[in-house]
Length: 493
Ligand code: PNW
Image (cartoon, rainbow, N blue to C red):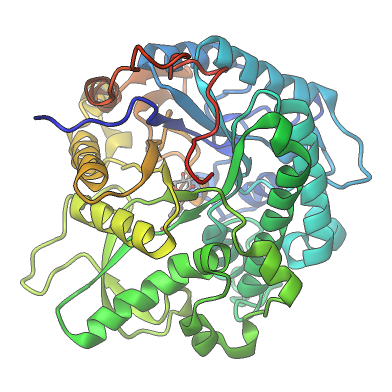
């Protein structure tokens, strides 16, 4: 018998505001740290920015038509904070035009029977808050402003949104933004890169602020909105599987250290109530401590586990990169073979067994229902191929086929409570510091014309989910596919 996914399994495609919207100054939007950063010389590949991106602010209706053609059940997008509060702060004016745009998007998705899955923060902090008090470096101020922004979103969109994500990938926000200095705001101890910053302390301070801001917003939602709006809210963490390079105890330990810093840094406080002991060992008093009150606030502050994952690393002890737990990563096995197919990005190879192993690791450790909110592959050199060739994206299909089969087994054979899957990304888009050469889309975007062309992988996914999701049972009242009536997942949520 072929294995199936439950009728209410949520699958869809994902994007983020700054990566697709463009129109940075239209309808009163204020600048974000990514506008500033991407316009500085030398920060992004080819010096490119999100000024136009996939022009999705203007092409919203067209994009929704394409989502309909793909028959997705859900669409994950993020709200640009500075579109709806241009200066970002709790005493700053609200921009009704920006609110209207997202409100229309939500209405149009619901009309198309597509469930909105909304991220509040996908890295585009209002520049004014960075200038005013240092943004994420100032825990008390940023938490209060983030709560105010989230409240506005719940008030204005929460009657129609059942799935909320507070943050996308706090590890990336902290380490890439304040440690390595490769993402906005680009702070680092490396003075060749940045005039300001302290990579030894700031990432851990920022991570702590993000956890407090996240948990404060979840508290607000649960206390003031959940009983009327019936949604679920959680955080989404990046994290790739780490497997020991060989079967030595040292490599096994290295794998756990890698997971502790990549995932446990945020997941342990949220689901277990404390930072991983290894991080305290690694960082000493550079890692902030939670007050008792903060521990209470943070512990249990996510209704589900939002999982962004791309690859698997083989781990050996060594190196002095504390951002990956003083662990060395490789894709080359002891026998010299490579783990899988190489993507355009150095850090990404296919490895479905690792994806299944990570689902099991997270389920066993945190015992919380999982939504895979990002998973995807950038085909090597896709950007320089003729269009017809780029559309035949067999490496991406291989990647998704492997991971889809893996998730099916994780659910049916391993008993993992996995409730949704969102390939990254709906469209090729602005890949941050990597500009536009790295294409993660299942839809090709010709940036000269802004025309969209479905790649073969898009149709692969469409057909795969059509074949594998059980039809809604006739006995249950509401059809499971009705977006408006899609209630919160049941169980202990
Ligand atoms: C995620 N790394 O970021 C983001 O959520 C997306 O916005 C992004 O487009 C996508 O993955 C693809 O990169 C990451 O260096 C950025 O390991 C960098 C890394 C991982 C994830």
